[in-house]
Every structure is written in structure tokens, then in C-alpha cells.
Image (cartoon, rainbow, N blue to C red; front, side):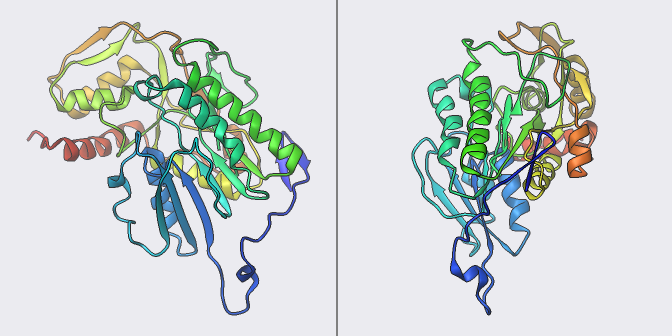
Length: 344
């Protein structure tokens, strides 16, 4: 029985993928599909899922933003399978859970092919294997037993917020793609009894982020390591809240395993201006680097902060890693990939 907005909703029991589920001398493992599993959040999620010997993990990724290097420790493992595929094309697999994380979150990548970004989110409708618990992710919107997220123009964002985005702007493919993904998931939930979960994922950072993907944390850290000026978009007082990737993964798994359909905000409510973030990166990585200002991008939200009361109450989850703890961990990863040693 799933909980939807405080009301119990009857859900069809999921079918068993194999008769071996109930075999006397054999226990089938939980089969989990992670789309976008070679990407930043997806690969960390795979690491966590693979820690459980009772899980079999299937990853689908087209490597548009992801990399096999993020999964190299699992390639060849008997409980792991990797498929190079585009989720805009139909895929038939029998699984118990789906974490749908396949969508570029960086402006550089989603502006490159906005039509396909829309299609990736709408493709959620094909992940409706009857009775399968789905998880889907979005960042502006957030879609994840399939679960999801949305960015907003309001200050502290609660799950009841319906969104305020430009439907025809350069970033609309991302914003509206997440919105329609949530709509489709709830339509399948109500009409076909598909069990779903929707997570609204807020800004996340950590190792394995693409170094030059245009997002502020990766930009600042890469610039500091390369002795380049930190470019703060005007006015510099706009705020973001940053969740370390291990905290994010823990929140997504708790949501998947719980009974609350969502939407549930998963993020860190600690709020920083872009100037404060630049100052922290400068202090922790390169005190000699300059901080300069540049023009802002259109439709960029001035404030973004999740209200995580529901996550605390329903999932018993809240973030543990502070920004000043996470930045050095990300720096070490970037230095390794860039081949730039730390300064003595």
C-alpha cells in the first residue's frame, strides 16, 4: 500500500520475475536497473547497490555524459551487467526496481540536444513494466519506484510547490522534461497501479562530476586547481544548496525501499551564496586564485533551498556531509583526473 499525499492508494502487487523466486533451494536476487548508471550520481548509486550481495545490478547508459571508468571496478562481476543503450529507444528487461537517472543535468550538455533531453524524461512512460517499482531522477524537477525533482523560483521549496519555470527558454527542455515525467509516473500509478517513487533531487556534488560541465561547484574547483580565476555569475548573491553525493545516494535508496510515493525533496538545506562558495573553494584549494564576475545565464533561479521535513519524517534521512568536508574530497578526485598534484 503506497502513500500518496497522505492518502493510501491501492497498488497492484508486483509480479514475480521468475518462478525461482519461491523455489525451495534457490533464492533469486533483487534485480535492479539503473539508467544513466555510468554517470555521476548513477555510478555512486551502483557502488552502494553492489555492496549488497542480494542485488543484481543492470546499468544502461549511452555515455553521453557518463563514463565506463566510473564503473570499471564492477565490469566482469557476476552480479553486474552493463549495456550501451539510449533510453529514448525501447528496452525490454525484467527487473524488480528501476532507478531512472538518465538525463544530462549540466547546461552544456542539455542545451546541446534539447529535443533528446525532453525525450529522455518522457521515456519514463516506457519504464512501466507492470508492478515494477521504479525510480527516476531529475534535477530541476526531480523524477525517481520511478521517482523524480523540479527547480523553482521560490525561496525554500517544499514538495507542495508546483513550479515556476519558463516553458520556452533555453533550459526549458530540462525543466519541463522533469515536470512531464512526474505527470506520466502518477498517471501510470493511478491508471495501471504501477508502484512509483518520486525524488526531487537538488544540487549534488562530489567525485566523478564532469570536470568542465558548466556547473558551479565543478567549475570553481577545476578553476582553482588550474590557477584560473573563479568566475562568479552576477550578482553573486544568488544561492544554492549543495548535497554531497553519498548523502544523495542514501536518500534515494531509502525512498525506494520505503512506502511513500513522494514527491520527496532530497537535498541539503544548507544555503550558500555564489560568493560564499567561491570564497570557500579559494580558502580550501588555492588561496592565491582571483575571484571575478561574469554575466549570468537567462532564467537562472536566484535562490534554491530544499525543505527536507518530509524526508526526515518519512525516510529518517538528512544529509551528513558538510560543504567544507566535501570540497576536499572532490578536489582529490579532480587532481587525480587532471594529473595536477596538490601544492605543498
